[in-house]
Length: 475
Image (cartoon, rainbow, N blue to C red; front, side, top):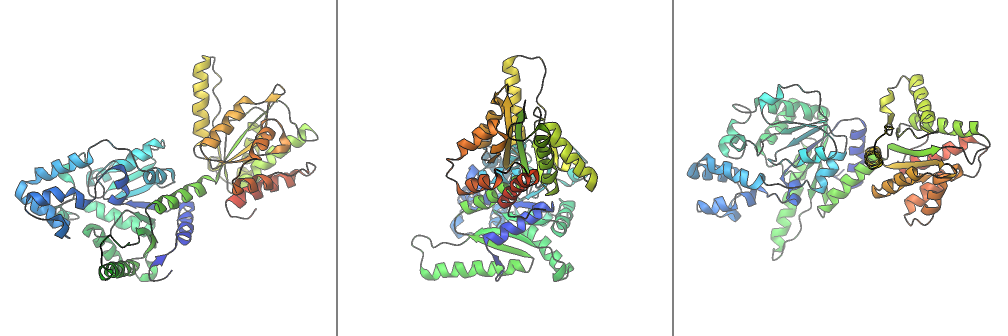
């Protein structure tokens, strides 16, 4: 770290640790919604400025500008402006979708749009949206994430914070409790700020208050990502250097509040950072695909069953969560291994195992195929690695396991077929021999050994392969 700046590697490392500790929160500003077609404040107020005889290019204080417009055209004009610009139907950006895939349960935003809520819902998560103090008092246990809308919501434009009058009343007449909740979250969670300019008076009041009340050693560390200033067309060297210096000073000043900044050259680097975090998070969840009418590749059936049992136990011991569809001859052994680990270590089984059995009802072929596909999608979408074992049915390779393989390819999971188990697993191994991605080739190679006499060695090699993908040592 230097003068409040950090690099991407350091940022990703710190955010991953916060995810693991379930402490990460996200603060989303207007910049994140631009890719979805929504406007920044300056664009929002461009026409209103012209309408009252001002030039948006000459205005730095947009809060006062909004107040002037409200004074001359009444508050209802501001309300219409909000509805017109933020009420349109739009899809969440890639960054919204990536944030929704992370195990973040607390979102704060100054945006009026509904993009983060839509992104969460698309991931089958139930957002609990709070825009007023009254909603803070409502209890609801049936939610996956809370979205605090600091400045209100497009559904109630008359209550959004945008004018100088709104800012003056914030925390005193309106949203008094909101400010206190934000203070509490800043003390107990690690925030990542995205698309946020740190020019908001309400937020700056909160972090200033915390800085005054707390000793520097007690200040929570937070992180933000900013785009490095670039020289604009026809901009003089002096003007460019001035903006560079101003950004440096802002970054140094943010450090006073415990906020460290990662500079990126292009906005797509933010997406890359979030994608890396999602990949790292998903790789902690392992999908095990397989079924077995018979146990090929081992000396006897007991050795094959011991392999499956031992694999599940060691995966749990190394902190991985296993997802399985309770495949024939496979599921019960995986459950047994994880259950024994959890009983021995006094752990919750639900933290290490998700089983989504396939429906067996006597229903039409088309309907059951649709149910099976939804089942597979539900299992695979939250995983980052797929282990394929056995996969045989009536002396043939399992069609179901091959369908799961195709789906894992579509969802970009890393495949780990265990060749010695035969069946679909061996067929997938042969297909993956042509894979030109070094990370995948190396992982598959490390996971597969020819020595079937030593069950522990087979399991340890699979674990070493997965741990290599996660940059950790085997327990």
